[in-house]
Amino acid sequence: MLGKTYSNSARNFVYPHSIVGSFGPNFWIKKSLNYLSFNLLLNILQINLKESDIGRKLSDISTNIRFSTLMDDIRKIILSTCTIEKEVQTLDGRWYQMMAIPYVKQHDNQNDGVIITFNDITELKKVQNKLSRINADHDTFIYAVSHDLRGPLANLFIIISMLKETLKSYSDIPFYEDTKELIMLIDKSTTNLNTIINELSDLAKIEGDIDLKEKVNVEELFEEVELSMKEKLLSSKAQINYDLREPVIEFSKKNLRSILFNILSNAIKYSSSDRTPEIWITTEKLGDYTLLSIQDNGIGISEDQQKNIFGAFRRAHNHVEGTGIGLYLVKKTVTNAGGDIELESEVDKGSTFKVYFRNDPEEGYVK
Image (cartoon, rainbow, N blue to C red):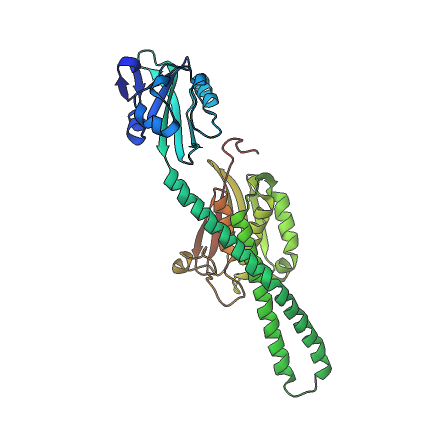
């Protein structure tokens, strides 16, 4: 074990170079739970330790750490030789990154206590809190805008519906066809605006919510998604082929359904007029991830357009309707859960979206 050996009260004990060089004030506790120090003055300022505390039982020493679990952490390390790293706050409002590691004797490599190191992160916490407030304001703004627009938009839909019904009684008037076409354009634009508002609302939910993972049977979920897209699949005559080597994906079911719906809808929407749409869907285990691949034989995406394909309101093709936020939502949903998404595409050949779902490292992957 590489490290420095300390003499006097710390004789024949090893302390790693990486810890010494990376962190500031520190102290150690012997296995008997007596406190020793080699950097005492700085620790007095940090956690209210006194010179008279040297050699005393830790249970008899008071610190200014708020809601302290220090004793429990120390006992855990002594018993298991694990390393504990956490953020702690002192009663004066300052924050510290605390690292506690086993205190190892050099001659027999036996654990004889715990070394505890503190690093002041108060300024970092202030920045984090400021960013949290900005994000909260951002979510509130999106929600307020989408909420406040729904009322007027609903009224607009009613007016358009009334105009359509009224126009039926005046089919013989001049400019009837022009008026009908104009109303249809207004209806189309209003529908697009409603879609954008709904997607902005979804974006706020994705950024603000934490959805719990569950073990989703992908075959059953694909059947649900296909049923919801039945009309699109029938009208396009699209063929879907499955190779589900991993039958379960650990993810939020509603979010996984949204991901599948978005990518499959794009595969149909951007299909080639020269051939029948065909889609290949596979799942497989790759290390700590489950990979979902969705490949199509559509019109493809040029290399230049691929760079920004996952950006908000970015679109690779403008000849079909769309808001340009669908893939952005997919990317956001996946990365928020610790995964990733990649695109491979060639113009007039098709596209492949590879979605990596991170498996739970504690519970492992369940087949």
